[in-house]
Amino acid sequence: MAKKKKDAITLRVNRHELATILAALRFHRDENLQAGRDIPDQFIKEIATDGGLVKPLDFQQVSKLCERLNTDEGQPADKGLMIEPPHKEGGKEPLFRVAYVIDVGAANPIDAARQAYRIMADPDSQPPVLEVVDHQGKVVSIDLSQEAPV
Image 1 (cartoon, rainbow, N blue to C red):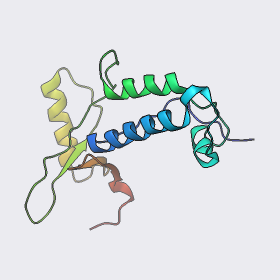
Image 2: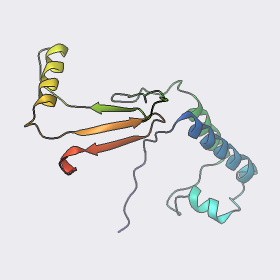
Image 3: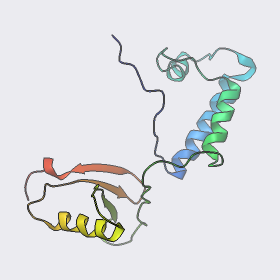
Image 4: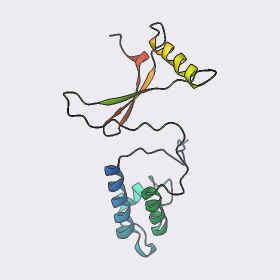
């Protein structure tokens, strides 16, 4: 039985990558989808149909997708916490933003922060999973419990 793909995905791209995606979508729309014709390039058709699993978007649907990607208006806010990448530094080593996320029970935000700090500082605490963001916005999850001891 074929593995069923999810209907929605989360895609994280920077502005440069988004501009390229929009340009490619508009080129595809203008070159391949004019007048409702079938996509002539079979390689592109294979991509546009996810290997025949989905019907390709038509001219109007690609136009609406470009509009959605190009604006935040009317879009619900992303769930969760958005971590901005650090600025590009000119030092010997690049800057990384490291996020440690943990759920703690506490009476108020200050107590929650103190509880999280105690857990972070406890040498007997289980090593965490950290989200590491580079200056270009690339995010890597690092599970320190899977790392060899230093």
